[in-house]
Length: 640
Image 1 (cartoon, rainbow, N blue to C red):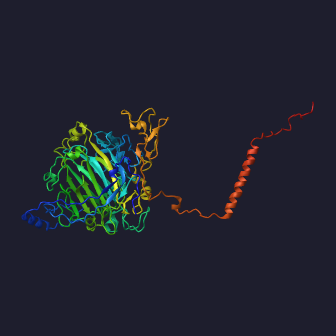
Image 2: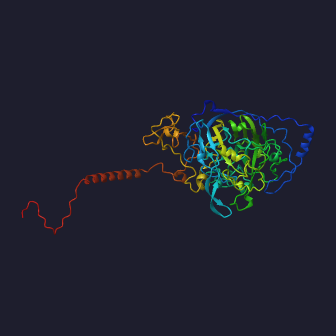
Image 3: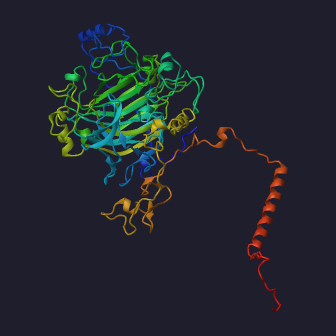
């Protein structure tokens, strides 16, 4: 089996980017500790942490002082060549990413209810600039929304004081297994906390910010039936009947693979909240978030795991550290009827120390994803500029005995910048500060005191920009499990999404995502492409994209789409899951028509033909009027 050549490839992609080779996982050389330190660490590591049944994390009473000086053994490197199946070079200014405007991406136009978000996502905050970068702009601007007051249990008007953008390829482009790369310059300033830029993958069964789609779906990867999956996984391996085209006895979910989440700030390593780690702000987190997580005997936040408390098979690169600040979430939903439905999700994560250069120039961020098979447990490998950040051996995930595995779900791409008081803001509110309101335009100290030092000055001085030069996805042509598509034979999603549309859209939306508008955008027939003062939308791109009609609307050429014909069309090489037809309901038209039916049809046809000919013959005649006998009418030819 081979990977079909997908027409998701941007024609502007350089020839030398058509293939890539997997990178070697090389554990960094660590300096050997002196014998006394080794002995002390051995004594500490032999002290087991007490188990707990508490629903909250357990602080490690005697944490390991430092990570092991001997990296975990890792499988032998076997280089492979991967072929390009998707690319977006972002070379055409004027592309429109609002719903229905682009075949690859949808820019959200909605409030973000997750993670104590302080922003509203607007499609107006993303564009392609004249230098060929996709730019996500985050600004201190107000947006009034209709929110829900949990206390009063009623809708109310809420003002979000920040505006940003999120691009998703949800239900448009997804892939299972392979390599994703992106060249990115981070927004903001290295030493000022508050922005939360991210590039990540999420299983197609959950659409981020549409919280109903995620409940008991995110970030489940358990395939088998376990006691926990029976209680907490919405689509579990305990289901005896497969609905919506899914297989019975096969768990489904939406694991999360964070290529990067970046936290800027001035807190240094080995100080304050980073007291016990060698990586401080600014840092990048590379994470695999998965459920079910460890239900007990968990390491506490800020503490190193004791023996048996965390996952094996983790290898970090140079200037990295296990992310001891965040081990995962305890998930409870208001709609749950029992605490037994609650579950832990784990964040298997390493942090990479960053510096100012990551915010002033582009770097290439890369994730290599190998899907588990009967012979292999798969892996996840993160790199920045080809240097290792984190390697997760799938054996360590399955070996935890929780039922979780490396993701097998078709996953889509997300790029966004968020603002949340959970990320990069002061961990403790200043004295007399309530940290309830956050508004950089306010003159009220209570609206300003909860920000990180310098944040509002940064936001008001110059709009922070998350810049993306290109995004590319590669797959192994010899691996039959590497597939392009959001609904594959092994992991279908289409019927489930179509059967639960309200989970994937807002109340005001007719459908989760609109069809792509092809042409029809307003243009100027007198405008000339290539002129410095002429926009791409005015000319419908250039000669290869389309042209402006006399009716002043764009007409797209073959291969191009969008209101102004500025987006290259994209589609999956193989349509694994076609839309349902009447045959799917059980109706099958007869393959052989009986002869008497054919004869009856011929007779009926000629009868109708004869009737039609007679009708046409009489249509030209003038009817004779009826005569009233009481009237005195002279017969023709007679005299009075």
